[in-house]
Amino acid sequence: MILIIDICSEVLHYYEFVRPIEEILRKDGFSFQTLHYSQINKNILDKATRVIICGTSLKDNEFLNNIDKFLWLKKFKKPVFGICAGMQIIGSIFNQKIDRNQEIGFFYEKFTKNFFSLNKETEVYHLHNNYIKFNRKQFDIYNKGKIIQAIRKKRTNIYACLFHPEVRNQKVISKFAKETK
Image 1: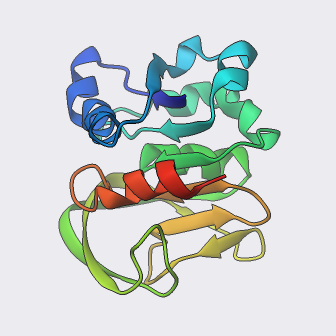
Image 2: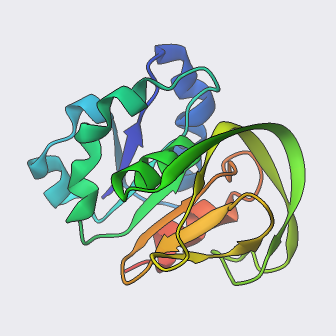
């Protein structure tokens, strides 16, 4: 069972940032459970085979005030995939620096390594105010550019992207669900 973590503080934002991920997984035949991050506990994490931490709207940064709710990431051994704000959570938990840079719209990003089927210049959808300055000693970086778009925490199954694959590049979510062990 894939655990989908909703970090939205506004209930209606679920339809934009969480439901599309549910629809991708449902279409691919995966079982999943969706919970708000405030509902996550050890028992739920133990039952999950992998975790997806969804993004949220531009003005919703409430999750940063509750970053302690994600400390489980430091010891979690199963695959995790953070999307946009989920990437910011992962960076924060592993002591990486958040910086500001608003990007909205479709952009071409050059992937230098295969990131769940993205491995060349690819159009992706950005919707963020913040990004993380990841330390290359701790994280594998999958794209070339000023702002890091895709990472993996070294020696773990923790992945994240700043762009929104649920909008464009849905195969990224499918590949994560199928290929990570």
